[in-house]
Image 1 (tube, rainbow, N blue to C red):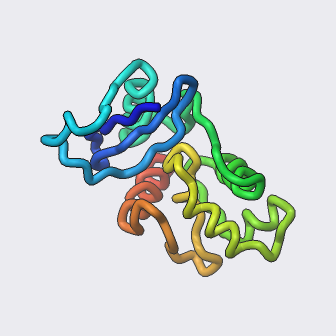
Image 2: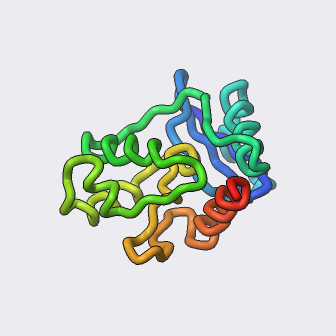
Length: 157
């Protein structure tokens, strides 16, 4: 397993991977001056992830095509798979996702699964909002969630 950090237009992004695929993408507060204290092994896979994220941040990419793994419970994987079906520039609610996966009363559990999503942006949990249309819960912070939704809505407008 390896880990590396890239500076992007939207801040530092940490990428974790194994021999076959990316297993985690998240925001990082890593001090780049301490880079020797980590593995920080950039390779073809992490470079591909970085460039695809940069294209996404530039509004030039809507779909990612690098290998990634979803690791979680069966329920979490159902939720994350449903998130991947939310079109770029669109949103869904926790309730709608719960209904889509056949558990209409499990909207709180959907929220918990979103919170456990280790592949932010790629598994677009930022596209899930409250039933009242408000931005709620995002591991990357609500400001970051708003920036991602604004990016997607401005490109589609």
